[in-house]
Length: 222
Length: 222
DNA sequence: CGACGCTTTGACAAACTTCAATCCCCGTGG
DNA sequence: CCACGGGGATTGAAGTTTGTCAAAGCGTCG
Image (cartoon, rainbow over all chains, first blue to last red; front, side, top):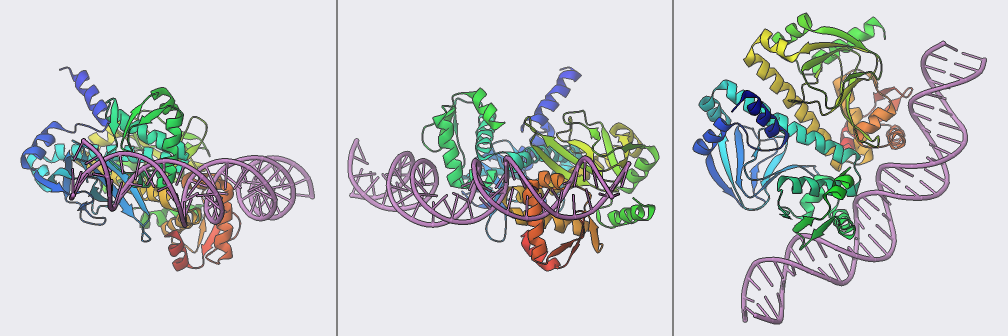
């Protein structure tokens, strides 16, 4: 494989959430502890020490932050083969919970460091943090400046892009979508109905949809 | 801006904005290029290559992202001695502009790397990315789940905390505040009036205020 | 001192939320 | 296999918050 090809792959990997460092992958699989979590079970809590690195094996995970009065902001969703929990230096600023029953690989950061070496470890941690920052920046624009229908369209768009399959299954309920988008479940529901009426997407049950008009969806996502 | 005022700002910023790596600081000061930018001048553009590291010497900087129809989201504000522009791997996802006339130290990332060594460089870059992520996560909660008055209260709170001085000068106009908070200038203005009526803060001119009741302000920031 | 640009204020409109009722899956048990 | 129950989802009507448009105020800088 040429150097250019390799570099290109790295960029692609950075641009889309996906395969991280290969060495780290191996170590993670070999040394990581497999843990299973039931739906809604906490994986780590807000303000807990961030000593571990996590990787989704199956199922899905959300990160979230609560205000004292119960309002909730979801930071992101993580699917199979994605890494999470690397976000902070000292403490986790978001908690992580199982979106559905799921299996997660857990590895102590210091163990990974001594296994792959300081350099590789630094690079990995930075790459993950950077990917996370990038997602969060997109999320910022969505929350700050998009309308409700743009938010919902963006959300479906991203989901459909990740699973390039025909029919996409939503791994989360309306409340989780709402708390990710800064809306209420009713507004989310109305916007979904609207997108269907416009023949942009088609739902078969609340958790399953197809994109009928990708161009229109992209346009509505603004 | 007077020299005394300028020095004061530098000291305040040193006391609060977390000190970065000292070696990197030195290198930045020794090898960095001093550039001056006029108010609203672009420092780097969205989707430009991110090869440089920037540090504010005097004045202030904002990062922002535009939608095709002109809607704008501001990512953050940077003051004296703060580092910016390290956010991304390949391309800048936000542009940076001078909030006021300002002086910035610019250093090519590769130059810093070879000057301080790979290890220190990695650590520095990760620390900055991490700090940035942390800010952005706070911002996410603000945009997604806070009300207009909570947003404005949070904003004044953070500003007052950074400059622990009695009277705080706003380095930006209402439009910049609005684009940071995901509001309109009119709503920002109304919320400010409201905070004054509640005797929580007191404005002397549109750009200068004192916090009268810090507890109340913290409570309103939620 | 005057003028321009930014800020504030007011009245109205639109977007989104709230509250409440109904619907519809979907899984369970008969 | 079908009926049933229940939790999540949808829909409607009304309310609240925030945005829009327009005009007036105020400060700052020639």
